[in-house]
Length: 212
Image (cartoon, rainbow, N blue to C red; front, side, top):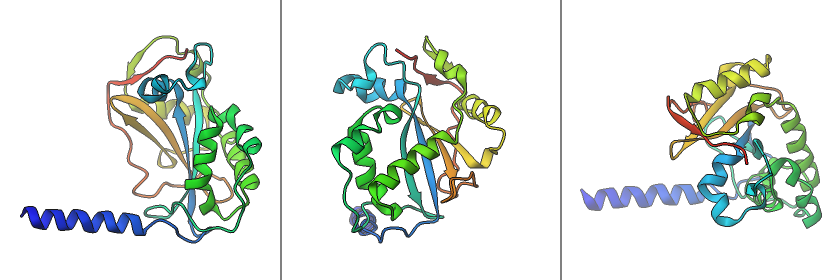
């Protein structure tokens, strides 16, 4: 049984690795991930000394990425002839992403799969971020809260009347609210999420870390 399990795991790992390096531009829709910055800071950012986690930064939901997605699964590290973004272009994304390093990493792993020049991909990320209104109440979180993850989704649905529940999902990590993920067409219009994206965090006592 152990030999069989090991062989099965090896096959899965090999399949996952083979899935990288697809042709750029071959995808069905986008997933836009908005990260709850205080949660990321508590999990990783403070230990790294990340600038977006410094006291007074007061960042709420920041753009994690805009990910090309298949109806099932997703491409990554795609082959493209487009040049990589300059440091200046990546640094210019820090206002909505928290840092230039994340912008560069998102281009490397996901942006190349969009089939767009780096500058256009960055501007598409910015336009996508602008399509969603982050509820103002999240900019007023000054103490650690415990709440059902569903409350976060409901707040976004109320602030964005054009959205429906099957176009947005909430993720949790280590007991904390992690991200809001929204599914968008290639024209950045809301659409139903695929089955592997649509699953919501069902925690009733998820932690929402406070702004600093």
